[in-house]
View 1 (cartoon, rainbow, N blue to C red):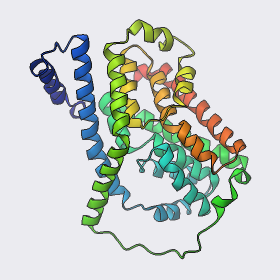
View 2: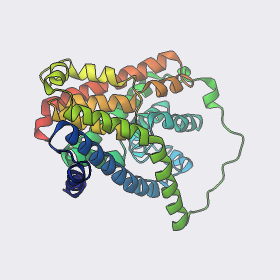
View 3: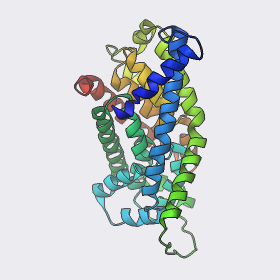
View 4: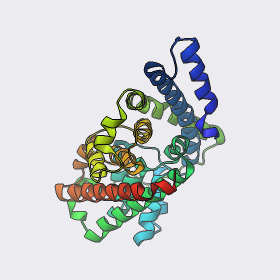
Length: 326
């Protein structure tokens, strides 16, 4: 499979043995090979995919996105909010300003929450990377359940009518008149895409290195018996535990993918690994702190509760039926 980059894996195998003089099947050599292979693969795919996604996204600036979402009502609006969130490669913290902008522009609260959930959780780049690590069935299933989670969560929040739980300053509209944007040229869109690659790689590189490093340790150093004793596929509590462990953490989805990969190879259920990954990306302590600045406690608690329960349900479903996707 092209996305697996077997040629790169073979090259790293050669470098580990020829340059570093290590046995690539030994503990140290295998860890080094895993680290180099996954790091280079992620950055290659990340750069290509972010460029492509950002070029496409240049056709959908925030104002145009707001206008598109404003044409829909009810669950269809939540669906399109979640769908457009998949086109924005933002982390949970970066999505907060757009959430504020959409809410202040008059979009329904539930729609903005659907966007807020799907934007960090599901994007085209992460889907391709997920397919490169597992397979397309897992990647597509992840997209489907991620969008469903965003739509259902946003719909529930809409039905609860909690607009009074948003801080008043969020609804203050700018006095500046709306201006029509000039169509961008192909060259301008290319520059936007290149800048997006630089910006996102600058933001996530440390999380990728940390994630791959942890993945390498789990993959080749931590005994399988130790991991399966806590997060084994046969443990009913593995999904809730992985979800609750992931919530306080802050990392980009690109940094959590190698950890999920290593956990699965050690006997952890695919649903448990994905629950951890989703909790880290959709709910993190920094994003919750930022969101606390714009919403009141009641709405914040409802939001976190709905997403946590949704992630756990998804994890249980993947553990139960994931064998048909592997």
